[in-house]
Picture 1 (tube, one colour):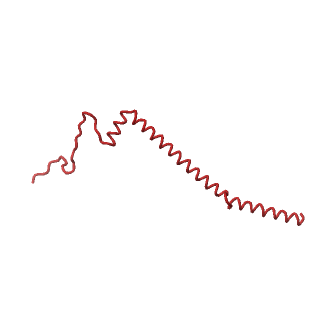
Picture 2 (tube, rainbow, N blue to C red):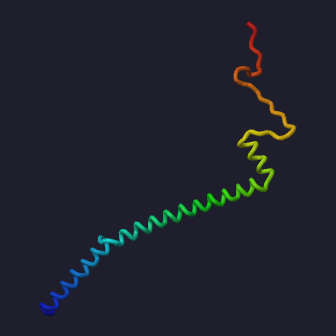
Picture 3 (cartoon, rainbow, N blue to C red):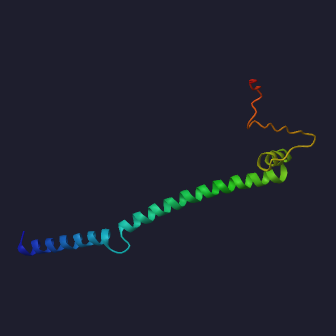
Length: 104
């Protein structure tokens, strides 16, 4: 190998090494690409969760519009309402336990 070939190989290696440095540390690099890929994956997961929540809300709205038993259940659970001809007994157990006290 002549001296000219060695110089050309050396220059070629420097150029290749420079390109590798630019690929990893320059503008719009491999590192930036990986960060953008991670951001995209997070957005995809967030969108999937939002779609799932939207489906749940759509189903609940549909049941509230068309299912009288579900409406009654929601009214009882969330609003504390009672049905027609129902009686509610409230028991006050703050002081009296129902056991008579000893006579002094």
